[in-house]
Length: 270
Image (cartoon, rainbow, N blue to C red; front, side):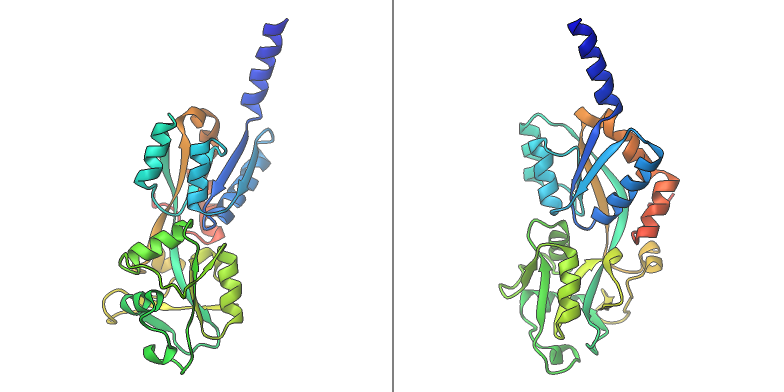
């Protein structure tokens, strides 16, 4: 009798495996839409998606409190070691690409900046908009908090690995940066392209010392002319690979990649 009950329970959990996806706020809206669409055609699937930042997601993977960690940066060495020490071999999958957009308040007359100017602004060397061709107005600089993969990526690829100034205001989520920049005249921040809307202004960026300035759009991200583009990742333990792979495969499928673009991210090139 006991064996029969055990077999029934095993069948039930494999069919109705409730997946948890956690991590990057950048990847959050994409994963939510993918999960929503996937569950419509897979009635037994149960997927919950929560944010918190790439570091939070990867820590949850180490603690075995999530099945998939969403990340907008590559896994760090110390995180790899923690997973290894926990006896949790993992898989890494790139699910899409994202353009990082630098945003300012709509009233700001500055429409373009070089990478060097951005470095100066976020390290605190440039403090007034008049220094970059704008009005005589103090800069209010917003960033994601340190647990964010976007924070790490921006520091490495835009700030040339320099440290953020102590005056930079850390925000807990991307949406909070959009809201703050939209309400503050001298504000500047950075967000994933999918989060941009008419309440803020996207800046053109130059990575060749001001020779060419490229606007962040789906087209420029796809053709790689926009310089701030990064991969977005799923990390999951091999112990749950069989259970999570159907969903991961769906995200990578033609249908899943169509959703990638619909939500505002850059699909994988086929």
